[in-house]
Image 1 (tube, rainbow, N blue to C red):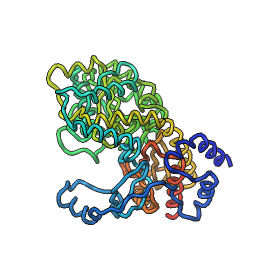
Image 2: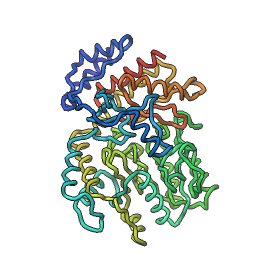
Image 3: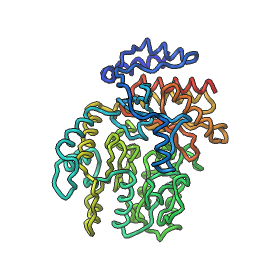
Image 4: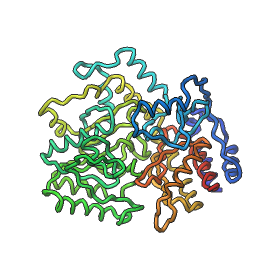
Length: 479
């Protein structure tokens, strides 16, 4: 009864948001669906859009061309590959016009919603004026967006360098840290993912994502993982490892520390409480700078704050970002202090596409949409409700070992044995397939591939959250 009362209260507070998203379902109707979860396949919430008929190549034809012309390293989710041909808000459509609830958001990338009109119109408007000019000429879109972007950041984080991806942003940030400090050693975390180029592959600490090439100058500290870590939720003990690593593994001076606020590829792992403030203090005493990798956790995704690091009570020296910054447009950025930014004036630094007017127009539109549609507040509200329901589901199904994350960046880890925490990789894949068949798409991550990554567009609704959990419950009940 308490749960239904809480849902009713949440729906009343967000009625305007639900109407905007095309929902007409009443609380009473939704309650009936919740109660019937045990016996019937959950019904997807209504949506006021139907795509036009698709006349492109078939799934089989696309797969054949991928095999012949694209990288053999490419892979796809699901036993039967999904051909997504259109997206609208929090939904995507396949070649047959079937609708799916997108709870992955293109890997935490679709922030405002698929094909959001404000973002689309901003790109088209700029495209009609000029598609590309380079920063060798003046164009107000880049400076306007930079001004708006730094207004969301605290402290002296005032200088922006635009890139095309998160990997590029992290590469640049690490280079700037090394130039600024005159040191080469960088501390990263085990289980982290920061990119797949030269320096970022070195900072990444999962063998799944590392090739056997030269990777030097990075030291990986014990991961402050409250679920699987050796010190549980004791952030101070994990931080002591960074201190020891610097003392015994370096000259005592380091270039910096790079860390995600919540590890994304690593399985939506939240850092142990108190860890980041302690580590930032340790690294700065060793002459290093602190880099916050906000590629996945930035742009209001965590709900309580615009940037993930803010929930830890720290202010980094360099912030990297991508993914949600452009709602799917290739765009990334590094924001730092004027003092640190000055190191790139020692030589010529240039990025042909960094600050492209079309991409920065999209980025500026994303900031407007997040603010105007109160997507941070929505991420907090819907994410909190979703996490509560997933936690209740954990009490029902032994297969769920842990539920974690913030806002609309949530993880569900599946284990065969809760005491041993044995990864349930096969079961995770089976659940993903079963949920897809019922219309829900989730991501997968974690070193063992046994974690659901739930990172939907920030326009996700309470109805969507309930549908996702009901589908997961139904699929698990059939195992």
